[in-house]
Length: 189
Picture 1: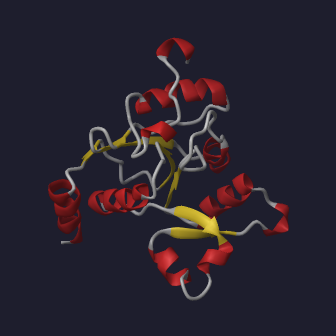
Picture 2: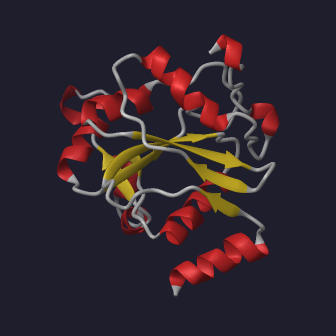
């Protein structure tokens, strides 16, 4: 019932569609989400999650998960990031994968909604340390599509692996395209 309501709002009222799917047998992964240029991306992600019927997650600093909003953020798929004990963010997030049998983490490698010239590599190293695949997800406002790509196993060669992942985002446009990360052309990949 909830999925049908999400489909109606997302598809009929908003005019969006989901292209591709996620194998429900993939219980742990990192969703590499581009282009993140607007707060609207959050509810597009929620609709996509509801339509696909899969648990999808995000991380936030542990202070967000205290009273009074802690229950809400957990219910929405959030996981508290505890960096105590000297762990850096990558290690701390990789540790979360060890404690949760189902953890599909959405990360925007831009790290902000503003224009960037380089992606942050944390998403890649989290997947590598956790031993999980990366699934590219394009939020394309120009076509009103959320496009899910194929799972990709990182090889420990970040630069080469980006050349495989980034073409999924070619021609996708964020809500505010002036802030889109520039996807390199085929000859510069």
